[in-house]
Every structure is written in C-alpha cells, then in structure tokens.
Length: 183
Image (tube, rainbow, N blue to C red; front, top):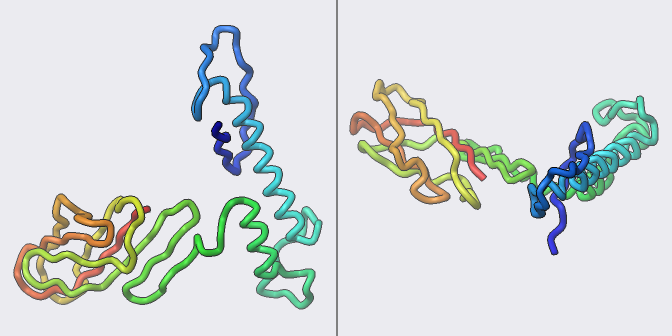
C-alpha cells in the first residue's frame, strides 16, 4: 500500500467525486484527488504553524536574524533544521562549493554547477565538480579567454553524469566558462 505524495501547497478546493467519475486509483487517480487536496492543505498548514512557532508565536513578527539583539528575535540553526526536517528537507539539501569549479544543491534535487576549464583541441570533455545523480539537463559554454573561437556544445551534452562534452571551432587553447544544471 502506497501513501499519497504530499506537497506544501494550498489547494484552492477539494475535489468532489461525481457520479460519472470512473473508479480510478493510483497517484493521479480521480478517487485520490480529494485526499490529495486535503493532504496538501494539511502539510501547508503544518508549515505555517512551524513558521509561526519559529517567529516566537507572532503572526506579524518578521525574521530579524541579521539585527537580532536577543535570543527571541532570531531563529537559531537547530530551530531551522527542525522546521525543515518537519517538511522533509535537510540542511544537506543545500550543500555547495563556492570555488571556481563549484556547485549548489537545492531542495528537490536540482543541482547547479560551474567551471572555468581550459579547452585544448577541437573537442574536450569537462569533468564537473560533482556527478548529477540522475541526469544533466543542459549546459551553457562561453569563451572566457582572448581567443575569438566560436564554441559549440556537441549534441551529446552529457556523455556521463559527471562530464560535459564541448566542441570548439578551432584547435587553439581557450579558457571557457561552463554552467550546467541537472538533478
């Protein structure tokens, strides 16, 4: 037996089953639509309660972490981790490397990566800072050096989950900037 996948959204309505609706279960089945609407609303309300608790119980108080002068004006790391955990998000979902050859992970699995490789020859494969767990979505390459060569990405943008293949119009050495997104 599977559970309904909940999202932190406020569904505007709760679907009413009609007498003409076919009996259909599963993730997107019509019989599960009202349950999904209510589950989403419940998770959204839970998130709102957690945020209100983090704000010291006041619905109008704003986060003042940068200007906090007292403990009750700021959200500490443990409070934030607990609130995120209740929503199924981990601090590790935000891991990153801000180096020239770096990455940023986002909740939900999206990963943004960048690099400044030097390309030699007419084709090169660039190793990304980390491997995409599932797939590379797209990559953008630009010339960061003084060469006037025109860059083109090969049709096979991601030969592996950790590399981007780049074609270059001349065989000169070129400093590039690579920006890739995947999950």
